[in-house]
Length: 235
Length: 100
Image 1 (spheres, each protein chain N blue to C red):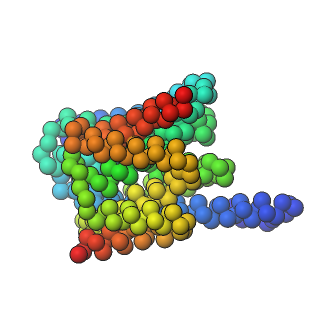
Image 2: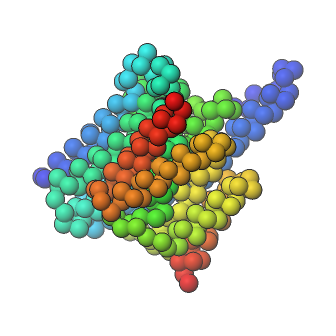
């Protein structure tokens, strides 16, 4: 990472190092912003009578905050296992859609595909697409993936063992850390009126559907409907 | 036992869903429609995610401290504030409004 600048392309080298620093700082910020949710998830899981092994398995293998929260919250509230698993899966569908984009962008082959798929989540995808123009998507993807994976798993264990020391994410305002970070990362993609309208449309459609459909569905409905609208616009 | 089954099915299922996008054949990803759809998808899905995580709780629409945090984030992004400033200021605002 810190090889001496030996070529003549000084500006290229400097801009590369700037990008590396930017990506490292952002990846760390995003990783830290998921820790209150990790603590909270661990604590909620323990209250729902999941064993430490089960909690760790979810964070290591399922590794998708929204799905994990839905699963343990529904079980903890005495809901059916069927609806708990169903909601977790519904919330997991968007990772598959992100996967197709990351696949097209980074073209992993062989075993790397499995590793990349496992860490394809909101955060790593948002970082990767925010760096498409700079050409640093792969670095942005992996830095964020490692940062979030490590901090999510550590905070999950701490939350399950000692409880949620930080209190609810709402009290600390950390419930908007994710949305704020995603807005900042989407900004370079929202420079045209057309894309801004599509993004607003997506949010609006998702919200309209919130009272009417199961939890997890609104994000998919908004996201897919907005893409369909975009295709119609462009005809 | 049922709990173990739920944990296993949810884990395996969500991991499989993540993998789904990576087993799409390359030639399907390269058509012009697919390219446009795939480029827009993360933007629209994340926009929907932002809307739902700020204005909804479960099946209910809500207007609370999170909206204030979002407004601050939008303003700071519009004036090109640094990433960390956007995130920290949004959280501080939401926490402040929540404490009122």
